[in-house]
Length: 373
Image (tube, rainbow, N blue to C red; front, side, top):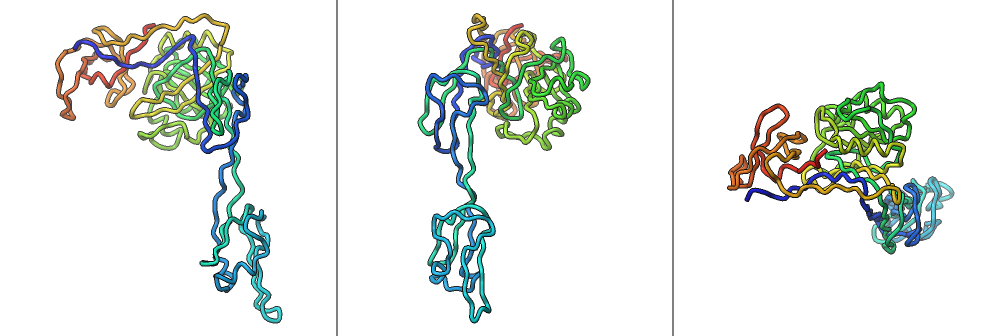
């Protein structure tokens, strides 16, 4: 078998993008099917139950559990405020009087006659779901959310951190092999999605955060700089929930790596457009990629290039597993027989020539095809 299907990153000038926007719990959908929406429009809303708190009223007031209800000044289901008097005893001749006050604002949810405990619940936390994309609501998911559709450019990266953000696309360098420097970032980039070239450094990340940049897009980054910026080493979990002030999308890999010419040219042609970005990445399985979506519905003709679906000698590839993660190379040999690798599994492999000139054997499942420039 000389060829094998290997998925690659999608880079398209014109594609239909559909995003399912779903609440974490059932709630209320606020839009109608067919309605046009902007990225920050709230399309659905829900109330997350507040945190419960348990008070041992019997113990605190020196009462038998069955006597607690008769000393309450509020009833189950009543709203209460922090510091409000919940229960009191009269004492003897005014002495020994005990009071129980609420430690939170919320609701008295339950009174136990068996244990003498009160369960208080904090006020519900409102959750609002935005559209994320500028587009049209094409489907309503009753009590759950919506499906939003748009047409435009779509770019996937190989790795990212940070969640969903929206900003105007701004080019900060002139060529895909030019590293992004601190001097390239300024006040003019506030609320922008800034595109660099071959490398983004820790200093650039910090400068961008200081300037209020929404997102950075670049070809590569040093893994040590990434860990310093987010505060810890990235593991195998899904990224995208990091507590960082901007979203970062890496299109090629780790270290100085020029952004693919096709990707750079596409983003360059769309400068000044609104871009929705999401850095969420499934690190181990590669099933979730960071993305940029730039709606351009009705203004561009479809020029999507098809990605090759088979490996051949001479095919450019990106390696997506350690120890070569993120490196680019060219296939130089495709032996048809199964080969035994370090794990003792027998798989189909390919010989790949790296930029250094070194040739390595790599399982075909550990690489992806690159679209030509």
